[in-house]
Length: 111
Length: 116
Image (cartoon, rainbow over all chains, first blue to last red; front, top):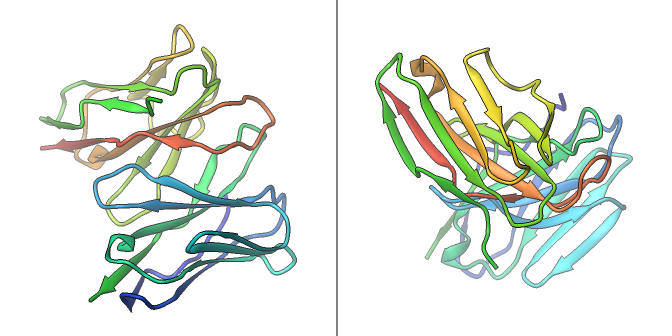
């Protein structure tokens, strides 16, 4: 499968900005997903990037560079409820769309 | 509308017992995926259904794991003779489209299985 790397943990204060990086292998690339997962809950969809560039969706933005095999998720105006794990995932293998996930980045927002 | 639901939410089994985990996908979704998530890790793919057809079971860890979706909606993941290493959260996800279409997957809350 894919080798997907993202940092294990990041800590930031309320109101600040945090950038979560994700790197992946570029062969057979077919888009990249970001999911948010609160402890004990379902992963919830945040974004899907298939073309290069930045996509903004409210306080969350996602960036993709296909040539570099690199994406980031930008969380602005951090709120306490943003404390969660953020998962980077790419479809891999055949055409069924199964996802290969990174291990997740635990974001801790402090007052 | 209703999202993906899973039952039970928590299951404790003694080593050697069989368990059955249920997934109710979003109505009308063609694709259904099962993932296994260990503590502190991302979900790992187990198996994929397109309607009632199981098209990929390459992620099932052993022949003790079996999944079905007989009528193309509800799916059941069965684990026979459970072992301690089976302890994990089992997530189900569904997506609207089928073969060849990368599509957003919507996840259920998972079943946390603990094998003693």
